[in-house]
Length: 190
Length: 55
Image (cartoon, rainbow over all chains, first blue to last red; front, side):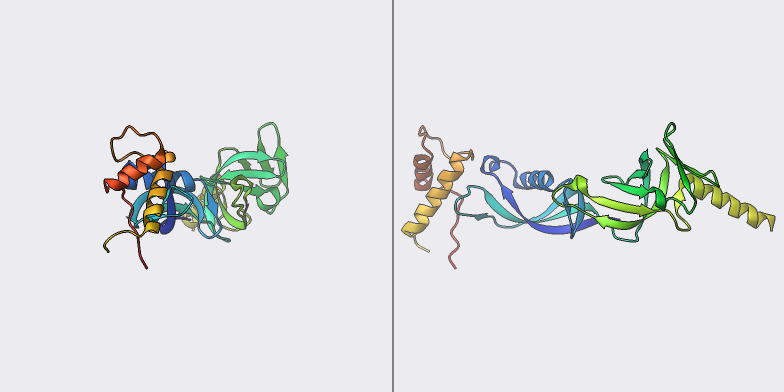
């Protein structure tokens, strides 16, 4: 889920940027430092939007830079287990599909796509259910649930997020639309 | 507070010299090139924006 949070941190302003407008410099430094990074407590930093408060500024012996206590607003993506999310399939392989959630990719293992047996069609890049012939391909929008979350702070690309679609209400957009149509027909038939 | 102690003076001038050596913009017009001399001149003209918090 995306959150807009108010956070506090110490920001280091290097000496060569001391002449400029303070809030702009602090916003810049925060953006360079935080955007794209991951922390376990807060999540994935997407953007630092605004600097709210700047403290007095301290000098530390040995470093010519000035350290400010800053309160700022940031947009963050924080995923939790069992959360239902929507994403787009960006790659299919024989062992599953990779789903983009925006700032990060998650993995949908082949065993978590459906209760049926799944075949991988390498030529068309599709994973096809054997009995119902439903398939999932690159570019499909899906609704899935987060079942595994392992965020690596040092190597954000090594983070692993596991998804499942083996529950009612989950699946690709196409499957969900078909089910919805089927339900409507049933109700009208009555 | 009347005047700085010798230690405060030393610390202020030293910190300002370090900043100048790291590329901070100068606050006075001077022909000097050494960061320490420039910091000394700035201190004498009372333009260094560093304050001392005495606790």
